[in-house]
Image (cartoon, rainbow, N blue to C red; front, side, top):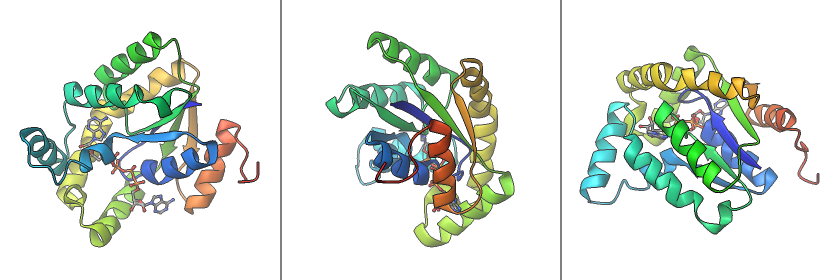
Length: 193
Ligand code: B4P
């Protein structure tokens, strides 16, 4: 299956992506994780990415599209993948469309995790206490939510119009949310299945 998972910061995209991919047997491609993996590198690109993330903004389409195109070309993505946190801009939607068209494939579904602002802010502030992520400070969370509302939320309509959207309530225990996602995808809810 070729899937996307979208939602506001803190909706649980990363949390669910790992579990969904494990159940379905596909690789997760998380642009957030790929950028965070640059944390320790001391290159101009890594410094630039670190600064953008800490500010709550988006890394440029040029950089993001390039790393995703390289990753999708790897053999483990040939038969399926779950893109977590990409595309986030109209330019990224266009690039993904072109990449899939080149390979003669397309998306099977887009999971939209729905969670209200109060809940996502409280989750991110809690994560700040546990993990100390530079972008989980209260002021940065506000910027991230604004960036999401301006640049990413409008993209959901594109996938709704294409008939690919599966809206899932992201509130409640992680395993319950997973059950809802799997059922929205028509995938078996238990490991044995
Ligand atoms: P991401 O890594 O995608 O991070 P996120 O939106 O904060 O988190 P996510 O929704 O995955 O939440 P999570 O499961 O962790 O992006 C980080 C940054 O990278 C962006 O701001 C941007 O700068 C850059 N970036 C990434 N992709 C980009 C792109 N395509 N273009 C440009 N820039 C890009 O969950 C959050 C917390 O909630 C966790 O602590 C988790 O344990 C908890 N949680 C999860 N599910 C829960 C539940 N059901 N109940 C209670 N808590 C829950």
